Length: 178
Image 1 (spheres, rainbow, N blue to C red):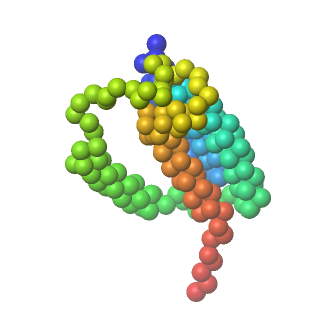
Image 2: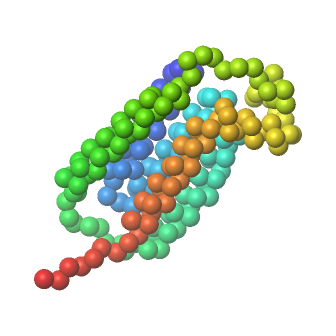
Image 3: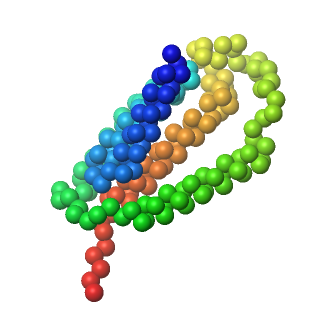
């Protein structure tokens, strides 16, 4: 059952992310981003990272996206753009993205960041069950920055991309007069 749920939420996340990128309407893109963040939160829940999943929904999909929607609605005009989608620039940007992603992936493999052996014993301040509730801030921080470091970094990167996207969408286009 978890494999089927993962496939469902991964497809939901990828579909919503493509809606986010390909939509010409800023509000539709923001709704696609909300759905993407909810899909990522569902993946956190499947990884037994309940705290990160709840934070993803409350902070990113809730508060931050409401702020983005308010900014988009306040700064954008009501008229729809009649220009065609710039496929050449989008294709160039996508090619650059995949080139850079392949370079980062190659550096990740080349640096030896993937361990060839299994992880060692659990530190003594952590319990035997990492999903168990603990009130120790030290054990929570150690767990957050060891086991759940990648989901935390991905969430922060998504927030950065969303912020850059909102800033670029809210800028008025320059009218070049010949």
